[in-house]
Length: 114
Image (cartoon, rainbow, N blue to C red; front, top):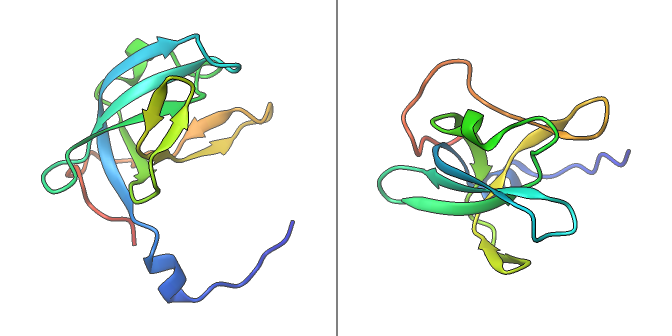
């Protein structure tokens, strides 16, 4: 593991926000099946789409109304036929499958991680 040191100003460039999943649909048209998410980040950012490879640990219906943490200032990325606008953050389980990073309390959509 290569732990390169960055400055605090580098970290400040990454805009990590809290949002609530308002729609989640299974998407089978990719090499690794995913879930298409619509996430509400509140006023100023709005609703953004993401393709997330979460199907080993989550069902689409279980993700509705769940709050998640995502990077919102990456350039949009073409993934198959869809555009992913944000990167939802997770940590790998023992099978290297993502487990979502989520707050322990319900918080306001759009707040920034610091």
